[in-house]
Image 1 (cartoon, one colour):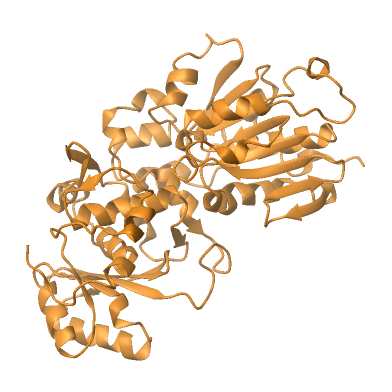
Image 2 (cartoon, helix red, strand yellow):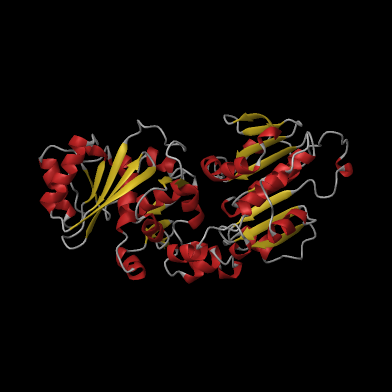
Length: 460
C-alpha cells in the first residue's frame, strides 16, 4: 500500500531540517505554536510506516496531557489506512505493516525508577515537552533502542539514524539546556534545532499578539515562550508557579472528551468575596475541570448569601462543596449561610496547612512544607496541572484573564523546604488588579479537602 504522508503533513523549513538531521538525538525546541509536536508525531509515523515491524514510542510526563494534546495531534496526522489496531486501554497503535507505536508516560513522581520501561524494546522514540521529564527517563530509555525492524538481523545493518530519539521542549532551566542547547555543536550524536513561532506558516492568526497579551507584560516569559530564547531562562523563571504549557495542555475543546466528561461528577464552587465596589468572582469546577466563572459587581453580603442559597436550592450544589474566602467581608457570608443551616466551608488563607494522607498523596509525597493553607492549596493546583489532572473548558468567558493571573504568580522558599506563595499585594502590583479568578479557582479545586473540616471559622 502506497500512502502519501504529506497529504496531512507538509513540513516547513525548520521542521524539515529537524527531520533530516543526521544525529541520533534531535532536540527541536523553542517557542509555543512552532509545530514541535506535529514534527515529533510525523517523524515517528514516518519511521514506523517505512520500516515494517519496528517499535516506537511517544512519551510525555503524564498520560492525561499526552491524551489531550499529543495523542490528538497524532490522530490528525496518521492515515486511517495505516492502522490495524488502536488499543486505547493499553495505549498503543499497531500498523498494518506490523509496526507498533506505544504511548507512555515518564512520571518520576509515580515511578521514580521508571520500572514501566523495564520490558520494552524500541527502534526509536520521541519525548514531547521533554523539559517536564527527568533526564533519568532518557538515560533509562536509550539502552532500549535495540528492537530490529523486519528484515534486519543486526543493529549494525540498520540505516543511519533509524535508532533515533526526538525531543521537543520549551526553553526552561535544567538538563536539556545544559546538555543540548549550551553544548550544541560539541556532541557528535546530538543536535539542537531552534523552533520559532515566526517560522510556522500555519500558526494561529494574531498568535504573537495573543501570547503577548496572555503573558501580561512579562518580557522574560515572552522571550522564552514566544521567541524561543533559551538565554532568557533565568533564576526568576524557576519560581513561576504554573508553566504556560501546562495551561495550554489543560484546555478541553470538546466537553465530551477528557477525564472529567462524566455528567455525574460533583460540582464545586470557589467564591472570592469582594467589597461592594469590587468584583465578586465564583469559579465553578466539575471534579477537576473548570467549567465557568460568574462575576458580579456592587453586591452586598445579603445579596451574596441569597445568590449562593439559590445555587444550593436550584442547581443542587451540595453546601459542603462551596468554599468561601472567609477573610474580611467573606466571614459574614459564611456566618449567614451556616446560620441558615448550610454547611459551606470557609477558606482561611493564613490557617495552618492540612496534614493528612489524602492530600500528601495528591502532592506526590513531596518532602515539602507550607507556610499556610493558601500556599498548600496553590501548590496542590500546581501539582495537578503538572500531572495533567486539571482540565479547562475552552468556552469560558474571561479565560485569558484567568490565564494571565496564573502566569503572574510565583512561589519562594520561605525557609528550608517551606513553600510560600507571593502575596496578593505583590501580584496586584504586577497585574494592576487582584487575582480573583485564580483565587476562586484554587478554592474550588481545594474544596474536597475542606469537606471533613470544622464548619466554623477558626481565626489564626
